[in-house]
Length: 303
Image (cartoon, rainbow, N blue to C red; front, top):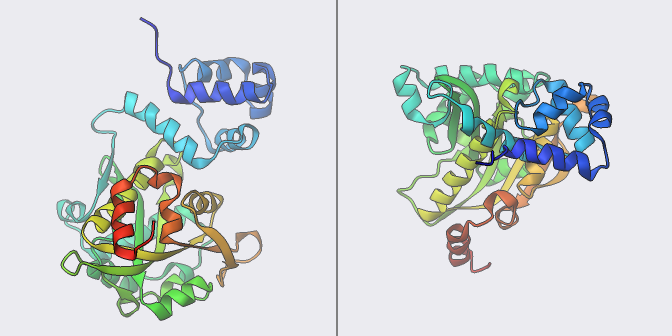
């Protein structure tokens, strides 16, 4: 029986050949030996380490979304039950006897690994964020590896004045309180909201293991579920602090607008991204989301 190669192996060879590189030439560019590269292309091993991944992205023209998909397919082949990624919500807090304060502290610790140059003004505090998580339970999910939190996504629905400040790059996360948000609820359908994406991130040690694709898929499922229950979004704003953040924003159809008024300086200055939700729905992650498209068309009278 013919062995089916992992997608990672197939695409690495295809990218190399598309650039007219021999294995020797590619190995030299990537800083590895020919045997190592050959094992990648035969599906015997996978690239490891941030330097090698960065070199692959640069020399092979690979984006983060593609990497997540290829590594994710590899992980599905080899993972064991105790080393598996899970999407969790409030049930994780109950199982670990945590409250919202404990959760926010864990996420702030994770943010330090995700965006080391983020200031406390841009981050916010446990006392400020815990009530926001408590008041808006449907707008966040955790990614765990076994029982460890290794990533999460979180958005809030901002009231109009705060959303305008966010869109203009004037709102720092430390300024987001319960008074600034609207809490979507399935008990109050036929509402539309303005989404501010606080974070979509995976710990650097897990970014190239397919974890990101699972986290993004869970976000897509949740906003589809929201539409099915009569909760809709009009616009979305996000702030990109890292190269991965810029890639992710563009991947969801957002466009850069202004430089954020962050405490960061120089090359670390984050940028604000913005889009209407109809632009987001046309992005690749929502390809095939016909029920959501139909629900929005019915709600807003456009396609």
